[in-house]
Length: 147
View 1 (spheres, helix red, strand yellow):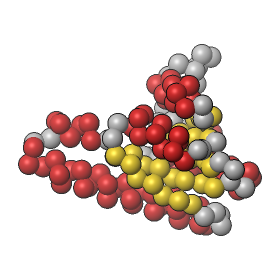
View 2 (cartoon, helix red, strand yellow):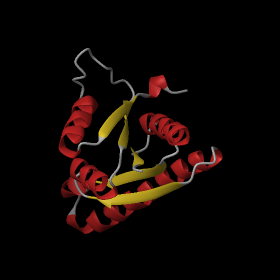
View 3 (cartoon, helix red, strand yellow):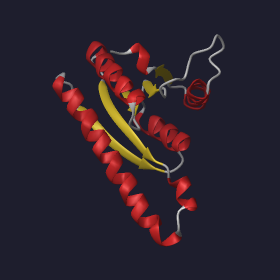
View 4 (spheres, one colour):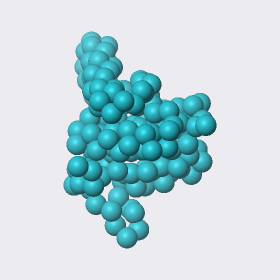
């Protein structure tokens, strides 16, 4: 039996997707994993002597965000696993999906993005690419759709 992976990054989109993932795990009786990816790509824009500190702060922030997600799941009596990965977001998510043999990935859309007839906004394109690359179903959750 595969798991549900919920990629989280903070913000309203992440709160919405966490709640949706918790509900999916409850309904389907599947294991739930909250995943945070610390992408160091922007660190190249930071002065060299600050890069290590910035990276450590990113990991700390990821841990805090995952602990909040874990508390949300715990309030609904759902046990979760927490994972932090580093590297380019798309590659790290895809690698984790394949390693964990996940059945479903849930992604939170940033507030203000909209679904078009063709699903051509950036998060939809990202979801489609991950689904094609891994064979894992991907669902995008929008903050406006979750209360």
